[in-house]
Amino acid sequence: MAGTLKSVLGKSKINLSKKKFAIVVAEWNEEITESLFLGAYDALISLGAKKSNIIRKNVPGSFELPLASLWMAEKKEVDAVIALGCVIQGDTPHFDYICQAVALGIMEINLSTRKPVAFGVLTTLDKKQALARAGGKLGNKGEEAAITVVKMLEI
Ligand code: RBF
Image (cartoon, rainbow, N blue to C red; front, side, top):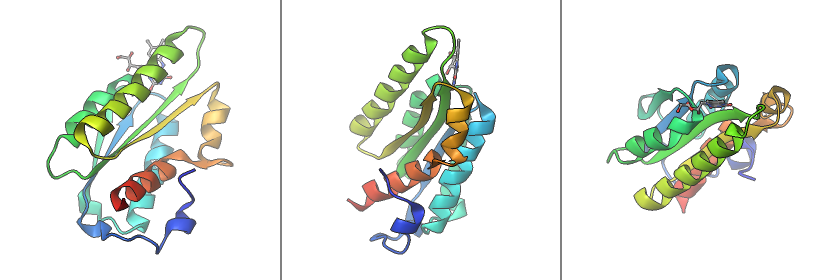
């Protein structure tokens, strides 16, 4: 697990005020992805990032996250990217195709750009499971994605 914000606060080995972050947010299941965004944004600020160093970009759905994340990671000034989305299983196999494509796409960007790109995409069976992980009783996976890129920048 990435750890809670409390467990990493004050322990950062790098000065985050000089780091630039891009947060890419999918608009599908907007209620959920907005909570993920707030979790990620607030975590970066709490860890010392500057508001002016956080860029937000929206994409239509999670399938578009890898390309937009690549565009962001390719920018010289961007140090890390957080990709946020929520894919909820429906009645067709679309779920599997989207989840796999996005996971592989994000991993590829990590390796090809050598910059941390967090996979903050919920892949759940229903909306209840998603809400529990977007600021509900199981925490906020957006916050965890932010903690993850910060930890990767420290390595
Ligand atoms: N995008 C999501 O981010 N979450 C979803 O749950 C989701 N479900 C979809 C279900 C179907 C049947 C289709 C066609 C698209 C879905 N998308 C979803 C949108 C997808 O990520 C992408 O934006 C579109 O397929 C256009 O490339």
